[in-house]
Length: 386
Image 1 (tube, helix red, strand yellow):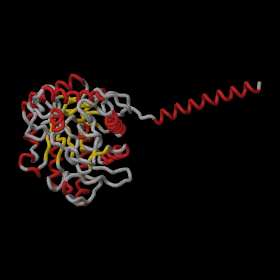
Image 2: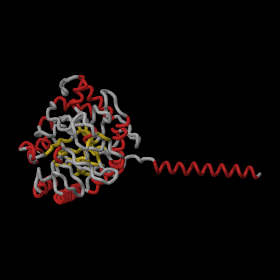
Image 3: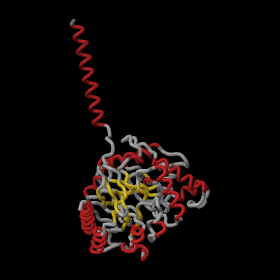
């Protein structure tokens, strides 16, 4: 009898242990993305769950893959940000009232830590890094714009790396190069997130896909083909035009599968890159598409404080401009130190919140401008509720 009681007690204790363990595992396990409905388009406006959606935020380009120098292909200082760095980036953007970010390094080809280190081979470790970026964004209620390729030969490889793999060729017209690129697109869109269990194409945390960054040489035919290809794989998400460094072209805005037309503004580069909202929003509005500014230089080399206020006020005042993202936020490393200032001479318009002295910017001035950007982001969110 005593033996039976002892066995029964051990059984009950064992059962409680399993129950407690199960509860702990549920608490410890990453939760699914917490974004609500998908961002959709109704003509020139963005919508979520039947309500207007407007946003402001900043580019967090480094989250999937970083380089302190922002070096070219074969840079030696490439690394994957830790989970703590990823979380810090989103938390900091949230402190600035940001609701959307654009992850430029979601496109990476050719390096050992890249998503596609070798042609046609994809790194599970690199994809898990991007998985965590998507998961953390959802936990912080931040929407993502993810892109697939870059043309500038930076450490993420991009078009130059695809051409290197094939011994040259026209990226936008060569069938083999187009197929290589499409394989990358399909890999990301069909990826099942290892943290959430949700396939990227089914995750509302992702606001939109962008075929590439600043593809000013991309023919209309290529952009149309790729936009159609993305839509054939993913019926949920929006597609943003990738010729965002040039003038806004009516024919490109009219591509049926393009939902959002974007523009970059860097007056420091000269007259072709100055703010020209009235002109640039005209073609998307005529085509009944959304217009956003997904990169702009916020610092004194691009705009004065008063000019920055004026530009942001013009965006806020026009409901046909859905959102804007400054380039680019830099967060902190694990020990709490700010990330390095990227680019030669401390350029690259790196914004450190609430402010930091850099070779290119004074801390006091950065604090003022960061405050302006934060107030604008809050105002953009409020404007959608009116």
